[in-house]
Length: 151
Image (cartoon, rainbow, N blue to C red; front, side, top):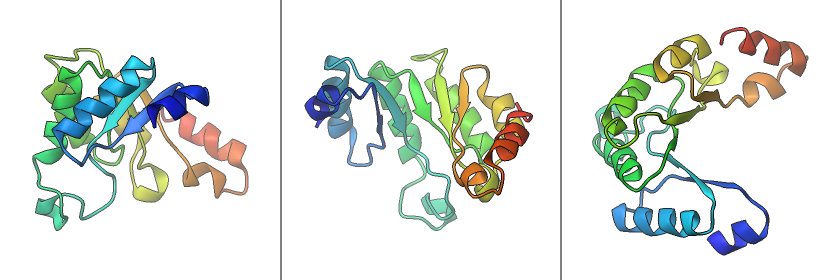
């Protein structure tokens, strides 16, 4: 899979390694060995994801994923923009192994996240991922400009 990405000219791969730490380690190494930037996610934006919210994923699994990623040299992470407390927790949990992470966050507009709140917690190395909040609007330019004003 990583060979195919590299051959296609892909520069980055996003992994959500819910299959466990061994697979996470192998996929991360395979990507890095092919000079692909690895971005790891462990927490989703939707409701009922973790067990304490009625979901299937045990509450500590996302933390374990992010921490394992940091220990494997990953510097970029997907974190839920509509859950600033989770962003703060991830930042703290990985700090020892990754003191200057790069964050990418979905979960805005439609899912209720506020760009201004997420950026306060995430810091300067943060990127908002906005889809429907722009492409479903009559003027995508105006929607993008309004969202950018929240930075």
